[in-house]
Length: 421
Image (cartoon, rainbow, N blue to C red; front, side, top):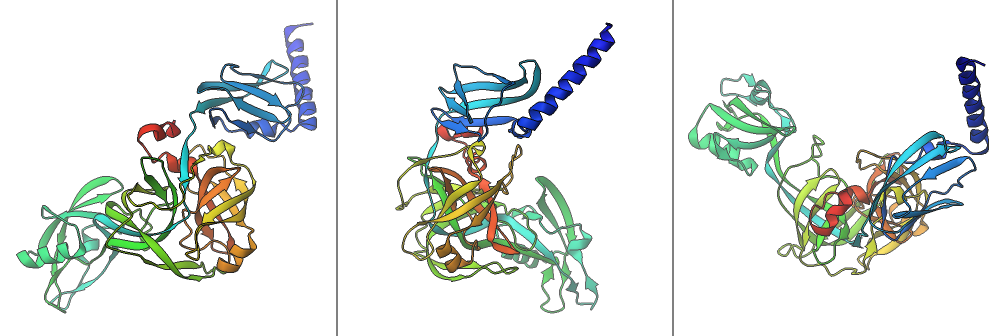
């Protein structure tokens, strides 16, 4: 028998073996496993399927132990290893990188917070026409290639901190042209804009609508232990007109009293309304506005002090969970939700899981997920797994959550840095 014939027979054997294995055990369970798994030292993680005969795994026994019914990882010590799956010990199927990391614990939030946010520079949120003293219509901002979402940092070398800074400078010097330094997509650009004297009030204008601050209500997600670092919202503060992430100059968070709740309905998201308490005394300061929420330090945290472990994304499972929130100023309560879908994300995204509100009391109070609940902690199996981020406009009982692992990556100091790998 020649080598070609042997190769053909071997190929047929492997194909029939794969068909057989796939018939008695769908190999998709292995293929669907993430390429990288992070687990906490001293923890146990089950994958919910039985390891069949014919599948062999190579792994470092000094870091982990495995059980096969169902496939379960028992971590022994901190370190890096891998799981290598083979068919009949010969044909490689998949390799999974495994990082065993120190346990991370935080205080879960749920408190409503008022947020005051001042931008670095001013953000262009619209372009307008200017009717000049000659009755002609001008569009100076558009002509100079200023775009919505641009952040104006300076005018003629003078720092811009508010909308008034631009108007006051133009009319102080009476110039008919101004040099703007703008930030666009992390690039610094210089733009020369013709200033037009408006017929209405004889003031010089650039034909730009700008914003320098915003305020609103959200939910605290977590506070670290002694460091008192906080994370909240789970998504960025953006300009409602442009959708752009607003650049931070300074910001504070405040205790908030809920005054009313507008129930969410199909195609009409609801809203939590409230008032800031003691605006002279913020309870914390914002240092970062990122794609996964706002972060900073609290100086007056009187809420829950019980710490719970943080879950890695590979630990999150479909099934029952709870969200924490205070909706009536009577303290934080846990409400039932169901994790309907988890997304195997290698690139961070704020839409990591789909959650469905099942709690009858919460549905009666809010209709589901409403504006102001962003940042509400999601708890599963005693661990903080994520935060509420978005509501489905066509179904307020459902929404998205972000993995807490992505939020913890925004904390870059001390023992919490290990979470980012």
